[in-house]
Amino acid sequence: MMTIQTHKAAKNETVFDLSQTSVRDLNAFLHQLPDDIPCDPVRVTHLTGDHSVVAGVDADLDVQVDGHVGYFCGGMLRQARLTINGNAGQGVGSNIETGRIHVRGDASQSAGATGRGGLLVIEGNASARCGISLKGADIVVKGNIGHLSAFMAQSGRLVVFGDTGDSLGDSLYEAHIYVRGSVTSLGADCIAKEMRDEHRKELADLLEAAGEAGRIDVNDFTRYGSARQLYNFKVDNIGAY
Amino acid sequence: MCGIAGLFIKNKAMDAQMGAMLTQMTSTLCGRGPDSAGFAIYTEDDPGFTKLSVIAQGDADLDGLHEQMCQEIDPAIQKSATGNNAVFRVPDAHAAQAIEWIDARPAKLALIGQGKRLEMYKDVGYPDDVAQRFSIAQMRGTHGIAHTRMATESAVTPEGAHPFSTANDQCLVHNGSISNHASMRRALRKAGIKVRTENDSEVAAGYLSQQMHEGKSLGDALDSSLDVLDGFFTFVVGTENGFGVLRDPIACKPAVMAETDDYVAFASEYKSLTCLPGIENARVWEPNPAHSYFWEH
Image (cartoon, rainbow over all chains, first blue to last red; front, side):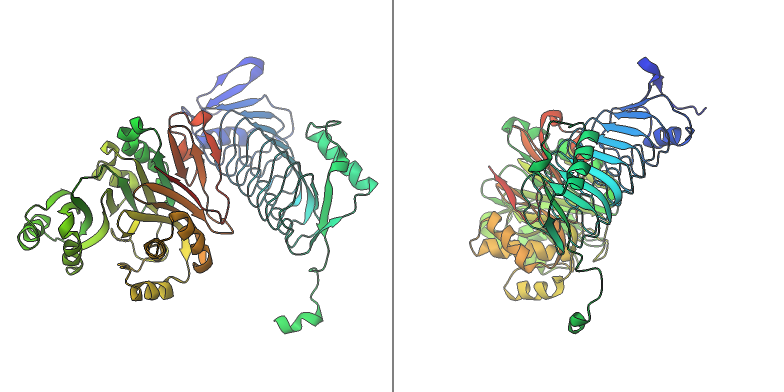
């Protein structure tokens, strides 16, 4: 076992006080946990917007982060269930693979960028480029999102309860987008699409995963997706090159 | 990279802590810009005097130059110097003459700031060391802007550090890069705006000064810069009574703001705001792209 300053709280919770311990020590502790058995929960306290908190973790455990975090919190996450009791800086859950991240406050730019799997739930707002280049993760934002969200998103789902900024889904591939509020503008090749039963079911499942089962009507949402006009080179456009 | 911290005090009782708060905010941004730093502090007006902030070049003798200014321009000129930086307090009637006098001696002095209230301090080195060198933490003021620089477009020199001041009591800091700075610098110089360095950010400062000189408000000047500046930028701008923020339409560069009854604060990262009193209950938000924000006393 490493010699890191921690203490055990109730329910076998290991507490990392970042005014006493470094983020590097916290992450080193999380990285040496076994990836094939459930582990005791971890709590992180006294944050001052530190970067890379709980990044690169592959373990079956609950992590509570009490405060505001800086960049890339929960990046590359596997398995773990991470709750951020505060705001998150840029790139929260960046490249998340499996597991779940719950942000109780707002998230900055590029939340869930390139996420490949797992679930990112943001209770507040997310700013620009939320879900940029999404590759399979699910993102549920209960507030608004900023401009250029889901830019070039390839697969996965983005659900927004509030409004979106400019250029939603610009150059979108096959990610599914559901928005309840207003869309300031759609990006190139992103269009509103019909909600069929399969989509209502998909959305209901996502709402349930985000703790909103039965509280929100799936029929209030509009589905957006790719018009699939940018996929292939068209010889008619040769003059533009 | 580069880091910006800005603080606009709303509660007059906190003016005395402005320098200390700004220094602490800047300290967390050292990693974003370790090569040089600068501070613009809006202090009390010194009636009848204009403040000229300068950097001595090479081993120029500030005492001797001050003496010479007193003899040739006005014996009432006062000097307060720390290291290679100095602020000359010049009777208003002779301010223009003193600026000309300084500009005529580029081998000895670089003028970096001018105004009734603006004092500017900047130097190469780690930002914490720069702040300490000039005792920024002991300064009082109504608002202030700090910058930690990671140089991209021009050399690391004391006068290449931000902020830049291109007109009385106006200054600007920039995070980003402006592509059309060469042509804009030529146009501004032709229009009579003094752009003193080859730095791209000074061009943005010069453009805003020109627009405000033509009668635009700070907000309108910021809005019009969106049409002419090619590049990416987050600006924080100070005027004698005001404080403004603008991000480019893509919002490449980070920005977070906090407001309480006591202050409005700007920082490149949230962690830089955590030292502020009452931050737990502050309204915290990210400024929208292509939208100008400004506050005035």
